[in-house]
Length: 315
Image (cartoon, rainbow, N blue to C red; front, side, top):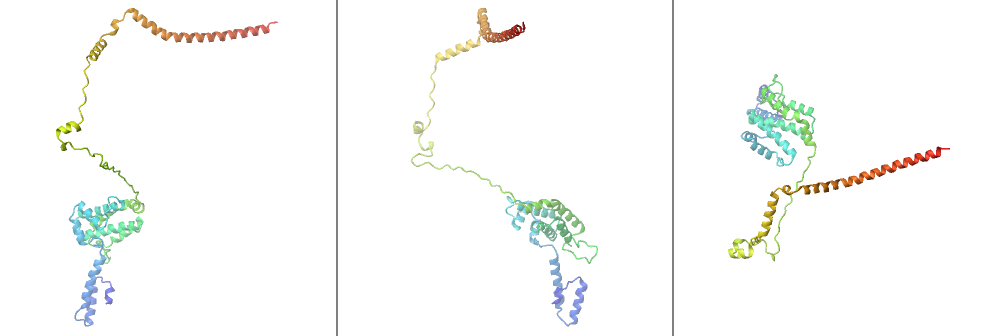
């Protein structure tokens, strides 16, 4: 059983161990069977496929449109508050965009699962570990080791089912969707979302006491005669016709239609002009007379001062 902890590198190591088991006289060759099973287990555990999404889940997602894909991812990762919670909405959008991009690239279920493990791990580093972008880039670089290696002895990090072109496309996508918006994701997972409480006032009309008929009885429930006599609103009372008022109104309208100025005489016009002029000029005359008297008083006082000075200066 000590051989189970040993790393099996290739076919050469298996053949060597198999020969050693035959040398010990093991007719059933049990160690060889156990080592081949360990090879499959180590390969499965070392791969990044089916770590987050299972094979069945990947097949289901690849056969859905974007709306159904979002619903499935919401159920898988319990993101049911995405309509109100900004974090759930951001994570669901991130996952949905990644899976849809993988479908557009024509990924197989194993490739889609491995790719999703990458983006899930990188986002989890931001969300849970608050990892800096440089450290997260290093983690991403480690996952890409062993994709179409130049040297066969380089051990794959778990994405060996991708080729070089697919690895470049994967790198461009992760750079565009995550690392270019790294500060935004850091802010989303570190800051508390502001809560808005929206209230609605609902007015409810309650029934009136039983002693008051409420609502009013329907007109269909009574006869037309009863409705017209006791329920219907009576028509308005017509106003009486006044012939004298109509005649006076007509005469007034006729006078207004005629030219009033044609009936004025020369004396009427002169009287109107004199009354208007008197109303305008009388206040003006009074004001001018008051100012003249004021000026006259000032001049008289100055003359008196001059005479007084002259009398005091004479011998």
